[in-house]
Figure (tube, rainbow, N blue to C red):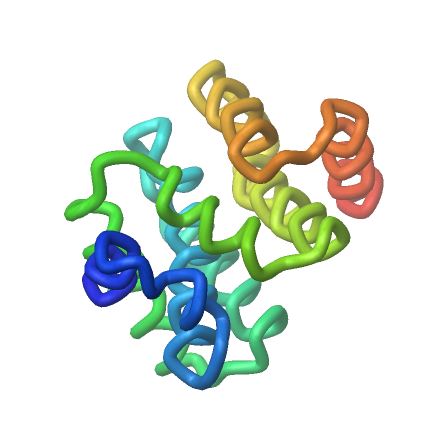
Length: 152
């Protein structure tokens, strides 16, 4: 991710983001970073949330458990070093289709509702993610309902 920041300031980010193995890896880290941030926004990163994120990474990206754990560790490190979530959202916006971004919103809702409820911080962050990923409020609500109805 540091390389992406360096590329951004050197003007090469648009040429390399999302291309090749490193770009795909960076997109996975960016996606995972949003999931990790959602899990820890309420200051309680539970084992259930960790398991949910790992399961999402394995199914969404087709990676092994070890690779999913490594992605999560790298995403956590990148979050600590980042100023905000914009850098992750920018990479996603540049490389994912609208449908893929809605898929990310759905996975974020999965993390929110692992414990069966949504607190004010998770609600705030979901609305922030909606804006950062440039999806509509209706798409946000539709994704939420899809996850809630899927849990029943």
